[in-house]
Image (cartoon, rainbow, N blue to C red; front, side, top):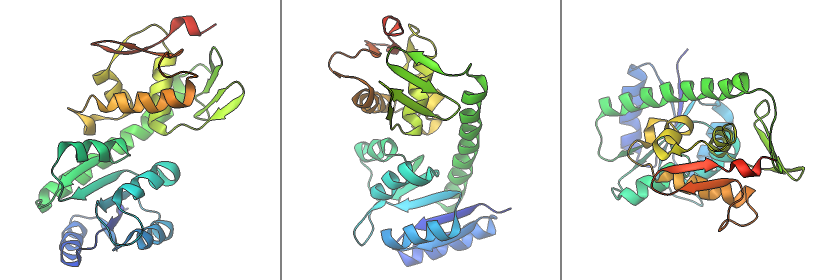
Length: 239
């Protein structure tokens, strides 16, 4: 079965050229030229991968699609853009993109990146299943209740809405209180090698996670920073 891709791109010539090449490579490509059209195409075709241009006409852009994808579809995404600043790449990755390719790019490079993202996505799906299979039921850590079987978290019996990445980070840390994890280790566990060289993106995810589970982010109860190394779950917070 061919991998179905929705490609959101308003440059018709680029979209047509890439679509022709990728279909020769065995992919099925459905084009969309705006944010609104992309939403409809995704609903209609149920793709396995999104390729999204950063700048789009209309009410939303590529980053907006990353945000809604993180909430609703959780599909792998490759961001395509003419932007070259490192900050832009980190921002795209932090908002949920799995890879980032800068225009102009070669068609063979594009194909290789798609195949790499799909491999990582399949490994990630297996890893998510492994979280459930390997976990010994519910994890109780102070006022937190972490359930790997449903990928859910409660604090004080109230649900806490976490992204997949935030859940994996919390589960990894909470499963081994007191153990120090480096940023590189957490990257590998929760995000994969698309983030290689961007270890500081972990800081952003931890900051978002703390915002959701800590009463006071300045004095965290659960996730502690080990300066110069990484993070650990506070063993004193498990009672």
